[in-house]
Length: 354
Ligand code: SAH
Image (cartoon, rainbow, N blue to C red; front, side, top):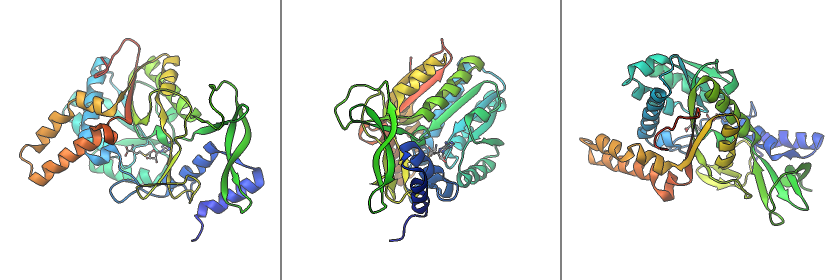
């Protein structure tokens, strides 16, 4: 078996500089300009490594679109308003949102579209999809480059792709690092970093923190609190912070070892929704939820939408719609593990969090 091309590069880096943090390792694996996972491929869809909610069914983006229009009205219908998506993948969610926006001409008129995407391959894909939808959009490398003003921000399966730091409970919390074993294979070890204010936990426990997620949430919530707007964050993760290892690698729709074939599998970690909500609150905004995805979609009319789509459809199509509803909302599918966190200015409560 030939080595993954990124492996040679990582070995050189570790030999030169010593072990790297898990966050640095994740950054190389996902975003290396030549060999990073997202930088080099379109991983979505039935033939790809994973399928996301917007790729499962148009109903997902339609419900998110209707939510955005409703919330925009509650915010006083700011015009102009930036409609921002973080990590738009294939652009499917944004194009489904824009189809719904056509039914609300005031909203459609007010929005200017901003996509935050680091992968050149996926940017190209998003450009094609939005052009076909007749929409004009602007691309940025980071949220802080989006022009000032009110912002409606959506992020589906974006925060799970941000690099995490891991700590191992030994005498104290010590930072986990990726180094080389005696046969020059990548191996986990312990680096020089320590965590001072971690919780008590049994020896050997793992604790994950995601400074990048907290930093981006702080920027979004500051914008929402001071310039008006709202955010909808959808991802898999836990409602409470606490020890536990969630770093995972996915390749060809099955789990693999995160140190195996770097750059060729998707590396993610569960999102700590409590930490995101704290960051939003500290920045002066109001967090709502997290609420399980199934509950969110059902409260906003997933079943009714499915019935409307099914009316007059062929029986195969009706089966597909029923399967999509199940996939998006059933507890044993995406309904419970996936969660929805909304952020608004204080004093506003968006549906269905009331
Ligand atoms: N939202 C899409 C794709 C999710 S995958 C969907 O639901 O189908 C994660 C997306 O985030 C990809 O588009 C990836 O290229 C992008 N991404 C990952 N890290 C990023 C970063 N730091 N900044 C901007 N985009 C990033």
